[in-house]
Length: 263
Image (cartoon, rainbow, N blue to C red; front, side, top):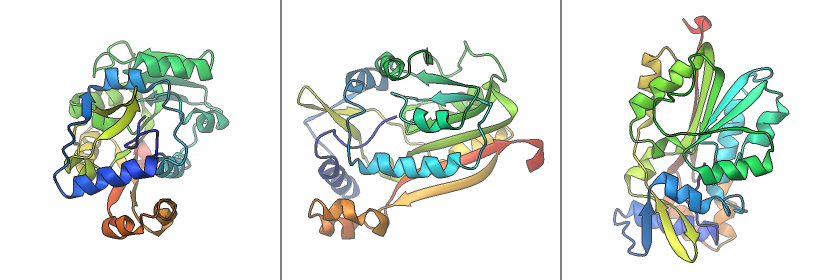
């Protein structure tokens, strides 16, 4: 749903943020922090224009690998934290019965509707998904979103309720370690640097809540700063920064399933 990097000079923004974060003194008086709804409404118009974004590329790789583990053909999918529908082309290629988009930002949902006329969209106003019936979906995908949610236990209980018994959940997000160090997701709007409010949820806590709701872990992936992304740094003459932060965990993804077959 979002990225750490400003839309101009993505890698430089990533480098700057990581450097400050890992030194544990990430304080920027030029950053204005906003809550998710306001921030993503501002970002909606420019969100899709982020070429060469390391974080989005990492997330795409993780999501693609996890999605390949489930068959969504003929299934009802809930995309929670859908943003502008970044993953919809890939999802539509698999011929689901339907995709329902959920997001807190009306601006993001409007952009999705412009890109995919007739899309079914829902603006999220509470953690409980009160307007959604029980067992409505076969799978939930949620990418780069969960750290914007404050009450994770209430939210994941609601996700479990709106899923059928035999169902899947795919979650990706910024690794909680970098968020715990103070990394902010930022973008530029009218020449101002905007940071988006985050909450740190450790992966094992998310897994524990979902296990208590009948799910089991199928797969977990972590993306690090390693040789596979070295070319991003080479392109910006930033190999010294690459060496300093090599092996830092940046993006994670988990796939969980609820089914009799796992009992």
